[in-house]
Length: 303
Image (cartoon, rainbow, N blue to C red; front, side, top):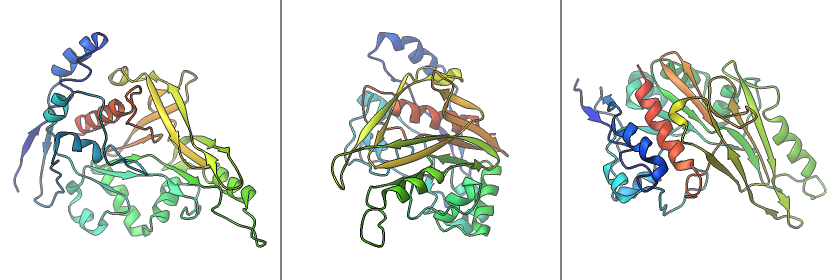
């Protein structure tokens, strides 16, 4: 078994061009580097061809990822990112290999589910999401044990639908059924015994079929000082109906009214983090910074 210590060189040039961020730059330069110990030769590594290609992999995930992303920070920042970590979508994981080698993955992440693929079989959203991705009970058990052993489950969870996903017997679009199913998909649910807060959004109707995508902006309040520089976030709504959830306990960012936007909860020796699927491309918002911060915080917090 070999050990490879990898120093995390991250955030060294965050927002260097802004006078308001001078203290942040200084503090981040003083951070103790994260050391990630690799205990298997079967881990999944990623080597970007270009420095900004780091924005095309986890934690920069989306239902509709863009080909080119400019990024909010300087070229020097992206060239200085030197961190190895492994992540896979919940649907792509080989759980039998994960059971034998739990340290081959650092993150498993979850994205919103299309309403026609969502399995509403339990009050526990963990089970509903797992069944929606065709995970057996044994695979669900492996996933839970993986988190308890130090894995990190990153959940941008919810259910979405277009306006024409379901039809009546007469051929008409079943608007009321679509709305009822999406609205009730998260109703009276919890996530592994954690209480949740839900966010239901409906886009405006343009005509008989089409709808108008929109966005929602959030002013944020930091409940953890590490995230105090996250001030504004944006959620792009590209579907007709979208229903999301965030675990209520241990929020690190909330709205001014106290509604959780991002939460981080211990589960054994690992973590479960939940957040709305905030966009990370708009330079006037802090979505990209949030994802760097979460990545750094979670890797640095594991024991």
